[in-house]
Length: 460
Image 1 (cartoon, helix red, strand yellow):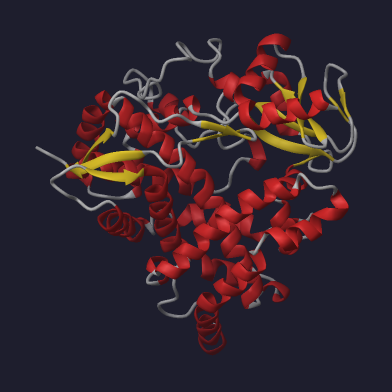
Image 2 (tube, rainbow, N blue to C red):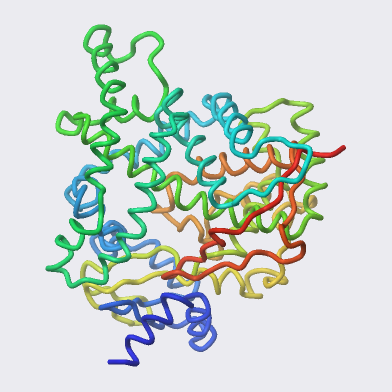
């Protein structure tokens, strides 16, 4: 029993090395790692990752896995995650959001500039900035310009609420999962304030939602000057049962969690890499300046910044979490080699070891910011290597039909952030040459939460 708990503790604090050890030892076969109260089976070959991707939802369920990992949301806001819920917000992310990223880019870029000016002011002298805190605030403001629009996206109370909600979802979900199933609702009520966060959010959103509903009642679904944002898209798509202020607020807060948590981690890693390897800055500046001077700021111009895209993709490859594509078996599942995974078992793809395998990437252990921006690539090959394209050897966004539906938004924001930084700031590590140490937490490679970076106005 003691050894079992030691294994769980080791996975929680050293999941990357543990999964790498299994990957090296079992050479493409299945292996398992211990989590509290159950094992997690790891898939490590391209063939089995493809079988994982192709499996039906009634065989291997992403939703069921998320319900366990985000236990606090599942208990307090069950209409969003449980299998009988209406996940219409996912279709909105794949359709309305992705289609409107170009149209909404002027507002998004405006918010990026405003957020940086307030959170990392342009000063002549070097200024210390806590990277994770600054990035989380900038991500939150920029995403909410699309989610709820201005001026609410700039409201300090709304921003503090969405950041607190996102943090509570992660922390409480991990703690609640340690309790036996029959105690989890009690633990959730004692450890989380998600319902209080929803009530808080309703105070902000109720006037907005009610005003828009009055316009719909009076002028119809497509009234003049109707805001083009997530609130409108949700109201248009929601069934009558889902149109209450409470239900819409719940969805908006949960989508904020999805946008803020992973994007903050990814971009904080990228900033640390940029500051630790500053020789990337000049080529990035040259590319961004040339394109912006010729075409201005737009999503189309961002899409032409191949070195920028490559740097962010390499950062996600190099600083990958241990696993991806997590599923829960709904029933016994048999792989093509005859391996049977029993019902109610977690299963996931090995991510970090695949990203660092020399068979998949040349010099895989070396950070090469322009790895995916080879000037000799054809345009077709260049598209294949974009940040948002998933494949069995690149899994930060998952892979297949359940790949992250918000990845295009995340990529758009991160490219906008990085382009703005290299054009307007000088950046360096507080301790030059020493990249802040990352930390493994239950499978995630978390960038240093307190490390500071040095910023100043760009010196010409």
